[in-house]
Every structure is written in structure tokens, then in C-alpha cells.
Length: 488
Image: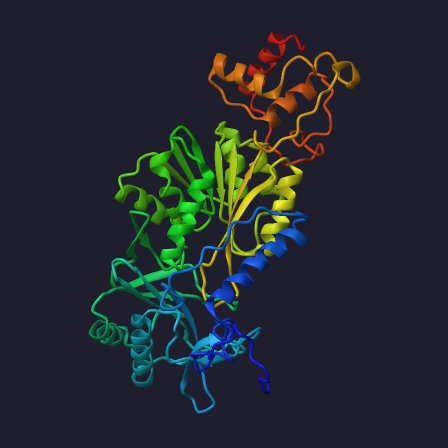
């Protein structure tokens, strides 16, 4: 923009000197009310245009109390200016060009102090700055985290190597400037990649984790573990997710992409068993520690890919009553969606950070019998373009059905198919054997027994399907039920 001719009634004066160049904030030039309207409409548009929903049930967006100082995490790339001075800040839009930033309004004051200390230390002691093009130099990023309630600060330096010269001097200067400094960590990332963090961490000072409190629980957070960047809005999001989960105390809850266990553990006191799944080993260790420190004994955490873990649970015969999905921006894979549906859960709660991939996945869930009941946008990242959404997926609700009258002689049913419903078969198996079986398993055994099936999401789509296969003991129980109902 070269000249503003007529400002919108929503327009405000940006309060950041690098707003026009930085790729972080994009809404600091408009009122917060206008920002919320835009984000809510973005979710609605994605559900309609990509998800194919004509009139999605959307709750009003949950706005934040403040647009400033909410971020408990900052990952700052490092570079070198033309005069050789250290550049530290954020990338410009659609580039890896660093916009030098002295302070960010989205971050707490402690982060500004840590950035200033690091600049002074780098000028006096610092190693060479990393260069992406030549894959040379040492210092790649400055990584900061804060526990909002505890006030604990973690400072992590990402290096192309095993460490830094003069780490003791950096620690001393940070301790002088930050009274609540709890951890100084070196993260090694030798890869020629855009991935920000490496897999190896070494604690230079203090603890390897910092603590924070969320939903009445205390959580330990390591450099590699996922934790919501806006604690206040995370609590609102989790409360909305719990409302959609509608827990009674008897459920098995499967939390896929669980991170450090925050969302599942916040509901652990309202369920029979929690199973959390995450692929990052450090996050799983944090989740186990979080469960132990909060006195939660009904939680199990698995370090696996979400799709693999879901299939493992099917093999173990554990079928969750409620599934929570909180995938990364790319959303869920088709295999995972198929496996989650095969569990035949009562409800699925889908937490998404990208409306487009959310809408794509909701369309697939709807095809498999789990339509969207309601969605609730949550503004987790004020000032930025991002918006979080919590969705409830469920089978037919008693208050949302159409009654039709069918004559049995008008339907093309075999005698066997008209004998018993899936629910009656499941109830019989549970009562007589104590085993829980899914619609998918019943469909597989009916097919084996020569009972004709209609086109049904319970059936595998092909012989090479990756759907989990019914275990022998459950096959025997289902066959017994089919005999009881005189279907075979």
C-alpha cells in the first residue's frame, strides 16, 4: 500500500514499528472486534466451501481478554546483517528474510529482556551465526518459553553443533536479568533443513523442564514438547472440548496427538481410563510425569504414530467411547480417520488449528457416518491470521432425526439381516463374554458367514484394506451371537 485514501471504520493505527514487514501479526491495523468477525467467517467459509456443509452449526467465536503479552513461546531465527550485526526477530511474509525486532507486543516482558541479554552476550562472546545457504556457522535460533502461572522462564539456544563457547557467561547474564530463570538448554540441530529444532537437548542450567498450571493441573514442559502458546484461551478451548465430550465417568477416552497430555489429563477425573498418543518421545515422558505429579493413575501414554497406535488398540480390543483429535496443521490422514471410525465411538471431538484441513477431514468423517454436530471457533492467536476450532462429531442425535415408516416386505433384506441389529449383537456379546466389539468386526464376521451386507461404512472397502481385523476370541463371540439370533 502506497497511500491510504479512506480508512475503514474498523481501522486502527498499528502500534508495532515492524508491523508492515513482519510476518507474525496481520491484524494490528484493525479493531479486535473486526478481527474476530473475520476469523469466525473464515471458519464458516471453510466448512461451507470445502466441507460441503450448507448451514454449519457454528457458535460465536470465543475471543481473548487481551491481544498482547499472551504468547508463552517464541522461536526467533538468527541472522547477520550487512554490517555484521546480529539479526533476531521473525520472518517476513512468505520468506526466510529476518525482520529484526527489539520486542514483540504478543510476548511477555521477560522475552524482551532475554532477547536483549542474548544480543549483548553475542556481541561480546557469541559464536558465528548460522547461514542457511552454506550450512555454516553455529547459532541458529533463540527459543524462549514461559510458565504463565509459575513465572518460570526457559532459554534455549538452537545450534549447528553440540554447544556454544562461553555458555557460563550467557547463563550468568541471563540469571542477572531474569529472576525467574529456571532453565537454560542447548538444542543441537545439525540438519540441513528448515525444521527449527533438533532431537538432542542438553541442560546447561537449572531443570530440563519448566512448570505451568492449566485447568487446575500442573504441567512440566520441555523444549520439544507441545504446549498451547496461549494459556488463558487454552483453558477456554479445553472447557469447550469437555462440554462436547459429555463425559459421565464411565468412558474410555482416547487422546490422539496428546502432546504433554494437557487436554486428556484435564478430563481424567471425569472418565474411567485415558489413553494418550504422541509421536515425540520427550512429550510422552512429560505426559507421564504430568500424570504422576497430579496424582492421576487412570492414564496410559503411548509413544507412537497416531494411526499405528489406533490399530494397536484395536488389536488389544480396547475401543474408546470418546476420541479427541488435536492434529498438526496438515490434519488427519485418511487411514487414521478410517481407524477412528472403526472404533465406533459415541463422540469424536476434533480440535483444529487450520479451518481448511479441518473442513476436508470433516467431509470424510461425514461420509463414514460421523457428521459435524457443532463447531466453536476459539481465538488462540490474537493479532495473527490463525484461528482454532473445536468440533463435535457424533452419530444421529435423537433430537435431529426424521421419522419414516417402512414395510419389511418392501425392503430387499435376507432373513438373516432382519434378525438383529448391530447394537443388539454388541449388547449380547458384552453381556455373555464381557468383550466389546465394533460394528466393523460384526460386519467382517457377517461377511465371512455369507450374510449379505449393504454398502456400509462398517465394511472394509477392499480386500487390501488396512482396517483392523477381528481377533479370534471376538470372532467366536460374534458367531455365538449370530447363532443365538438364528442368523446362521
